[in-house]
Length: 442
Ligand code: LLP
Image (tube, rainbow, N blue to C red; front, side):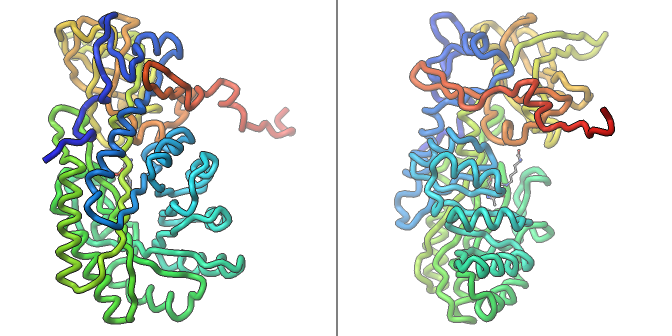
């Protein structure tokens, strides 16, 4: 089966240039580090657009597909504009994400609002800005959304988020579709929710069902199982309530290649399983083919991103490990300390040098657990070398913090030898901008 970009460790434009440095998007990474300073998030536009095209091609044989991008993986105005230009809609989970895509000029009817505890203010913002779908997660939200929509004389178009009871083999914290989950209606609660919508909640218009089974998924069978459950449920609701629901949203989840050990399926393999399962289940349960929503996040954005760091101090533990510290760490990439996530890296100014030592890359934050990469094999390293960590496009900037009051890095977009800032580095003044000293302390 055809390969897709989520199976690549590096951005597709990664090369070694005439300076014998790594380059991405035609930009020398050492020059980028000098120009913008480090840590620096670098995003390759060609890789991002390439995976969007992979997805569109992979699903082209199913007529009714809505590609949504899960903004939680990385949400900035520039990336939203790119994804929108590729024809993607957006899965958003907060007022902040709604506002970001809105400011980026996204067609709000292509936005779907997810989340297990949406606030009144967020629901109002979503209704005011004309968000296309709400994926309703629980009974409280059903009643709240109906009430707010009624008070504004609007109809909210909704999907019901269900918990399909599927376990994926991924990290416990990023599994969401198993039965003991904080997300969605249990299958035993669906009838009650549907009855309430039909009988009482007149300002809600139910279009279909939504599920999400987990993240960094390498199996394909789980999608088959998920689709079978969703389609069976559509057919059951038709029989029981005479409801012709015509949308299913199967969430995201396709994995990426963080290290050589990772072998995720391609977007083409996943699409093949999804479309075949959908066609087979539709036939089996005798319903009209529904519109399919998919909402991948990580597999869209991860591979296009790398992070550049400058190597600083190092410590050789007598008879133990050698630690080399970088100028960032758990605040710009919390994934290693949160999920024991593994990453691959190269020295951008020495890509051709032979690997001669095994070191552990430590972050600069005041916590022993702030280790970015354990036991990586690298060339002879020196202070000032530029480390390029691959596959940091997803869930890095979006989960970054100001731990230790360190400013978040800036992000540049590279393409055709051009680099443009898409997120400015925070300044020291940004860090204190929201602080207030009450008068009585002055
Ligand atoms: N749709 C829903 C409803 C989701 O909850 C998620 C992710 C996605 C789509 C996108 O899933 P993806 O295609 O990115 O796997 N912070 C964790 C990942 C948490 C994912 C949560 N939900 C990490 O860094 O691995």
